[in-house]
Length: 284
Image (cartoon, rainbow, N blue to C red):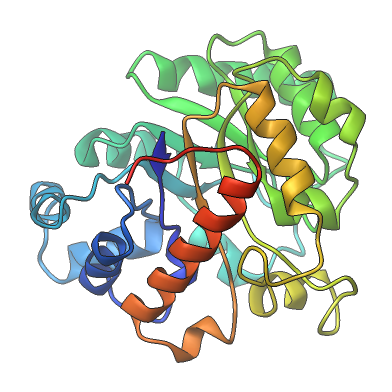
């Protein structure tokens, strides 16, 4: 089982500081997104240099973090420019980066105009991209996000199941599940292997901030320090089986005030504690 430090937990810090923090916290994986890759390129680092630097810290770069270009018209007109920049790679560029960095999985989502595609069309497009990625040994995982165009586990599963693509799976974030439409019956019914990656975050019982976006990007809580039923959800996922990668993803103005190592350390220890309560056993 891989244990990932998602960059959101240390978003105020540079790439090497993130690697250093991941090592100190006992993580073995660090995902990487488009903006970080382009920033490192602008600093004169090639893909081989980036991989070598991660290797120096004993960290594997695992996931491409944030992708929407599996659709020909990926962006809704109202999507903020900041989101477009994060999610702005084409399918060709995303796969090229994955190959260059040796990434094994892609965290994709949908930010399209909801009137543009129906579920059958989405499943067809997802099948095309999943097979294209699979031919390169890369697993495509589809994340549902309640603020965007695939808001629920139900819709994500309908797309993945409808695609009939070998190895395609739903990417599962506990915060998104519990802040959206938490269908526990569906979660229990999903077959083993339908969820390969899990991000863990806690939250307040009620929204903090003006809306879901603000709550998501500023007020997530460290696992076990909030009021969401994480143990129940994680226990279901553990019993299901098939999860290969798990770790905290906590966008938090509080974590932003800490050093990278301090943030990674508390995220690691508290996530491990909640996972242990839920029946998970991580090495180390």
